[in-house]
Image (cartoon, rainbow, N blue to C red; front, side):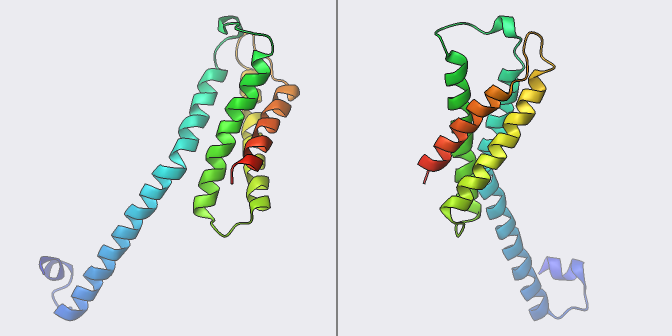
Length: 148
């Protein structure tokens, strides 16, 4: 009632109550959308930042554990990114066909992989590599196909 007086004293109380209810509904929808974003897209953003930070580690500081660790790391880290992206796309576009979701998942992850390799070109003792983008793409494709 206080809102109706502050908002417009000439507005009839019934009309003001409808406006208040509409505003409350809008606020609830905004909160739902924000929570949905936090649940589905925020993990994608946080994980992409994590990949960016790990890619910024100079080459001589990367520990050696086993042969082909670079290949395994690229495939696994971008497979996880693809799962997160696919999950978010599935939540936001539930009617999207599986093939289309796989396509967009792979495209988004590969675009990020290219930008990450570009970023590595500025890191000491790290070089950008199209072969690494290929491994990233392979991980994205595997995860895109396996995540339903």
